[in-house]
Length: 453
Image 1 (cartoon, rainbow, N blue to C red):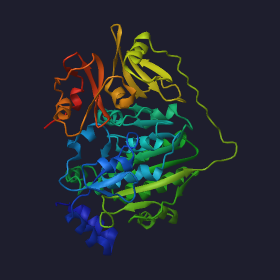
Image 2 (image 1 turned 135 degrees about the horizontal axis):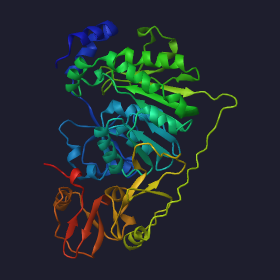
Image 3 (image 1 turned 180 degrees about the vertical axis):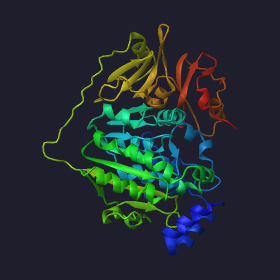
Image 4 (image 1 turned 90 degrees about the vertical axis):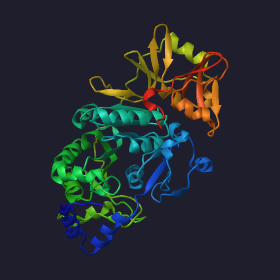
């Protein structure tokens, strides 16, 4: 493949004796992976039903390689949100950050949502995930993936970090900064990144990365962790950014990441930095089955008389009678908690949020549906967050049934049954809503989500 001479000269100087091995890695196939959505199915149960030949990714307990030629995005299980298709090395940051159920986590540069869905699965429906991206077009993909995964405790925002910062003083237990970068580590996976690099190299991204990191200290509680990651080899965007961050924020120190599974140490000598930068890790394509990445995990020390904050922003909103009528008529379960209504849209919000008035929030927890004239209309996100046992009327197709793809294409299904809202499932996993009219199912699968040949 084509690689710019400027890039090759730079890597030759950095890697020296390793350069030829590094260069040879570009002749290898790109490795492809998927990560199981443990909010919906366990890894062991997915392995039993998987239509793909899977091989474990050693650094991600839920991740697997699939073989070249497989098309997991063209399978009903993908539309049921049972897995996320993700480059194997990209599974590392959320795994190293290691969020726990009940944590408050911020994914600051989140779109299209791979790392956010991984964090949400680790939270297991407990705690708060604030997932943000500054690019509105990319946020649309983020929202889709949050909803596809059936995530109920995520706040999706579309803001600059410096504005988010004002709302979350000392709030988060963990912050992920998967920073925008020159993308050198993705050249093999996506050759179009080469043209992007020729237009915007490291010097373009460094000020952006530093500006993003300048907001971390204010939002992270004492004792919390921040994980900085990029998909570039550039020392200026990696060790240099961490070196400057530690210098400017003395309360932070680098946590050593184990050098297992082919991971390599950080390179302080490339930026005239301290030895502690060796605690970072680099993922090299000639040393493991994945693309290039850099990660640095940092902890914020607890100091005496540390200021502590408690957020009790209880919502007093109670859904109207139309919502409770819908629940009584269509569900076998109740929906309880804190609610918010925005523009006639009803949300179940995670507990312990500060007031977010003035922040551009696109999803405020679990989007349940919309109030219309004298009725409540459930959302697709609600369907994806429900289990088939939660709903009174269910159509459950076998994965091989031709009606599954017809439904995913938005076609009307000539299937009779009891009138009313019906959850369409594949092998017991939610796909979306339909409206049973008596002798046919009116398809309510979202047009933007439909299966395309």
